[in-house]
Image (cartoon, rainbow, N blue to C red; front, side, top):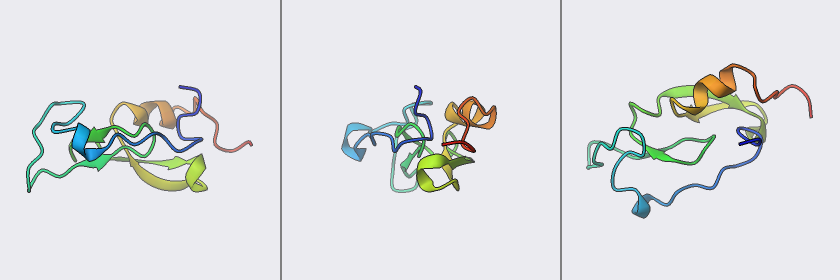
Length: 82
């Protein structure tokens, strides 16, 4: 995924995700859906509880999932250069 954090992801529609796409916890009135701003997956708050600066958001911090966070943090995708 060469554009992770550099371009807006395709957001999976809420209706297509009755459960968290990482841990498979069922969404309820109390367990809300969250979208990873890096990959677009629908996740529970436990699986999407990190923040990272994303280039497509002008380096603003945004919610990202446990899978995307280490990739973005490692600097694999440089957000300092155009």
